[in-house]
Length: 199
DNA sequence: GTCGTCAACCAGACGG
DNA sequence: CCGTCTGGTTGACGAC
Image (cartoon, rainbow, N blue to C red; front, side, top):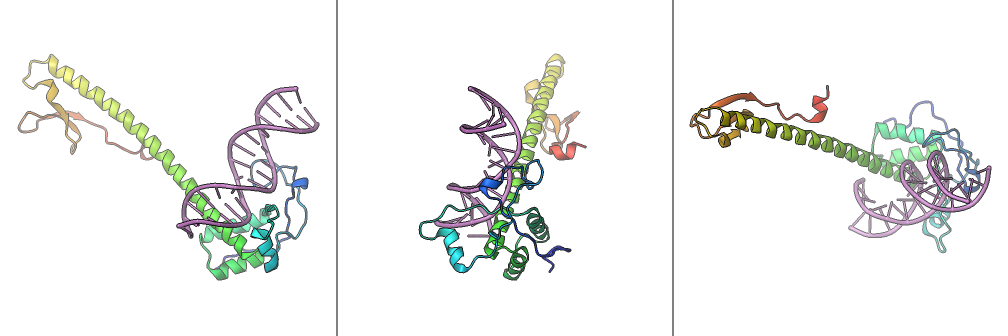
């Protein structure tokens, strides 16, 4: 499987450092190219260094790695192809991007979590809109029922208006007391989720 | 693997 | 301008 997108050679590595990162970042928000130092801090450290970076003895304040635009792009491309990596793919990608496999792994974990979060937020929004739409339809149905009751009260016919009810199956307003379930011919709009109704 | 969280870093708003 | 505050993004980590 091709985990590495086409036309990608090894990347030159950059990392932002607190004193040199005053210009707008390129990978988020608006703005131009961010200032970067050409340092090899992203580079695979020895296992000792690795240990020291994570939780070694007196724990030096961890410096945040900033992926370059190109690294982000390649990771995104890989993610689009596959949301998880096997160890071989992880190794290959890490070598190619000159990052530690652990960094690749963490990036994919975060990426999965954040796309899931985004998805959940979208579903939540959708359900809220649907709820609003159903509420609106419900209100309109109540109005219809009231109108029909008023019509019945006004007429001299037999059925008490209060017996009007909605047939859940055929979605028509019926008079419940009539043995034959006589249908008052008022078809009701079907309940349709908002996204289907909006075009 | 996921989840919750921390922390570095950034942009933008705001007051002086 | 400049310093500060605030909120968003994202790399990293520990717990499970």
